[in-house]
Length: 534
Image 1 (cartoon, helix red, strand yellow):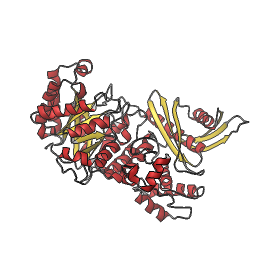
Image 2 (cartoon, rainbow, N blue to C red; image 1 turned 180 degrees about the horizontal axis):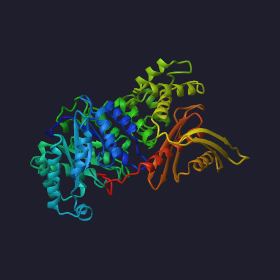
Image 3 (cartoon, one colour; image 1 turned 90 degrees about the vertical axis):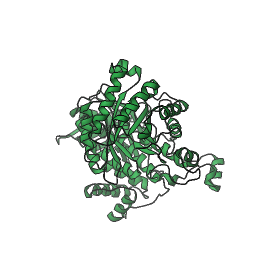
Image 4 (cartoon, rainbow, N blue to C red; image 1 turned 180 degrees about the vertical axis):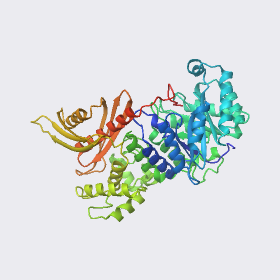
């Protein structure tokens, strides 16, 4: 496989590295929903998970391979340590996919060799070569990552890359594992590989990087200029620590500035051909889906997909944009699928109109899920005069993409005011079907509700984040509540939407507790002492 490709391959690792972000744990149905949307977005490769990590991960990779890895769909990839058992599990999980990839990795920096692997350079080089050859017995598409490449001795890195390519690696991924390098350094690293690995023309150079210094996207763009042709990124930039390079930022940078980047890919400077296969109109929808399901909110000033990305408050800016958008906007909001469509349906709209609008928004629901969403839509329509696309999106995400349905909220009732002590009564149905009711007093209505729920469920936890966002403007707007809980099992998120923010708060809390409870019941030992965050 040659590296002189005239386009950029987008490798999405939202479901693997992105899910390692504390609190972003997804169940199998949620992973499948994201994978299907990533396919609509047009990513070339989906890293669906780490098959050997747990039976749940193995099942998720297998389902995505079967349902999303179709002939006209993306390549489905599974991560694997440079061990036979990992590689074999990855191969088995991706087997249903029309095109599957095994991505194996092994650290090459001296600090990792000494303290983590406790192996010599010659041992590591031999293992890398042997395990790539083993992976090649299962699939022709094998990727190798020298973990912590940015801190590896260049001469040793060149040697390892040459050996794994000879063993059959078709992609070599260069990770900035700790997010330490600067753009100039990272570009030089890629250039050095191009110039010093004799057989590099037989593999695609890929890059993976973390955003600890806020330089991940800049590093990747510099890598492109020096020969990288695959970018490993995540939706909204989620991932370990400060996250990964954000897919939407990379894609739009390459789109908006393609005249600048065209020559680096051997194209005419003025070529209008896109540099990636991404359908940019799916970007905003994908961002919202990932944010909703992971509970990881997008900051308002986030590039491309933040709420303020296309907002103008300065009088000078407003005046300029009204006269010509190009005065202060370098891209059109519609290019990422963000529309100004406000009134789409109302209380008199029928089921068919609702189904049609959902299809236009990219949602393909089963009859059961459609019925649930339509009933919720009618409920909201009775309270709101105008229903927007954003409202519909919130309804679908809230009704269809739920946490495990273990504890179920049946009733929440609150009494509060400036002259009274906030009191809440809640009724929940337990996983065994028992109806449980309790009440509590709190510092405010939400605090009272959460204390009452804790009395009912008796699940130890610590609330570490609580946020409320309005889906649309207006006093009757749907409020989205996102929370994060922590206990010894980890961090768990919950999300809910309702015109009553107290009810939404209760539902979000129960959702998070259900995730926590499920993790407690299905606890399994992870095969790694430290998770792969290259």
